Length: 320
Picture (cartoon, rainbow, N blue to C red):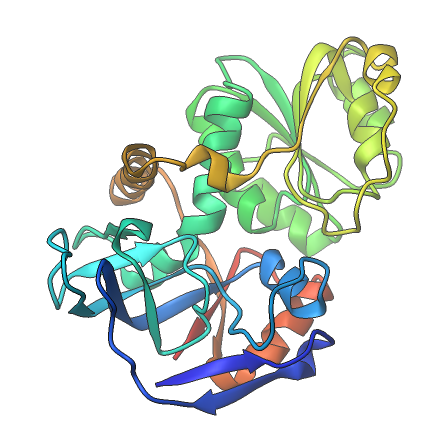
């Protein structure tokens, strides 16, 4: 097997490709031949030490592939089955091993690259608009980084539910992509709160979905209508400083969430249900998954650089 190894946290160049032996799956686990693995900001946080992991480690949590072998006691999968996953450490590799319950079956009608690309970001978008704030007909929401991986998927889901989307984008090309993806209005980050107020007749939006963090946090709170909901689900621009709860009062008795995907797929039933709904949307052409960037395993460092420098739109994946 081959895998990216990080021996010490640091810049993208600390990721090196190494070879090793296939240990085979222990009881209760399966080994999967990886066809594609997703590249996400959490991988960057693991690599640079912002979210520390014991070293050495292999980055990556998400992917899709074919079951190679099953360990003792596993009866839900067989060699040859197509599976995907959203939280199996060590996914920057051509073989991944994990607990059987962390994998879901992929229907034949969904391509492996699509399945790999949609797990983390698609499941995140799903719980944001269905559970953190249940978007309804006529709701107006603000989605930051609307041309990013989560933003593109979340916009489509909100539109399917009858919502109106105001999206932010950092360049003309990203704004064009966000519009073509269904955003009703696309605005820049500069003074975005004033633009949101203008576009909502000074009322504000029902919900803000913010994966940017430090740079947009205060403006996001000020973009909400009274009793609105803010979901801070990422921190691409850096961590948000400590917040006085009184800030939520002055913003209009608003609700602030800091959700984590793991808590919304905490049972096998919920995990499979969410993934199944994603795959159904894809197979019915209700959800377009844009895989815009493909890299080999040895190009993992470049993938991280492109992600950190905001050069990517849609999804980036590694192809072993």
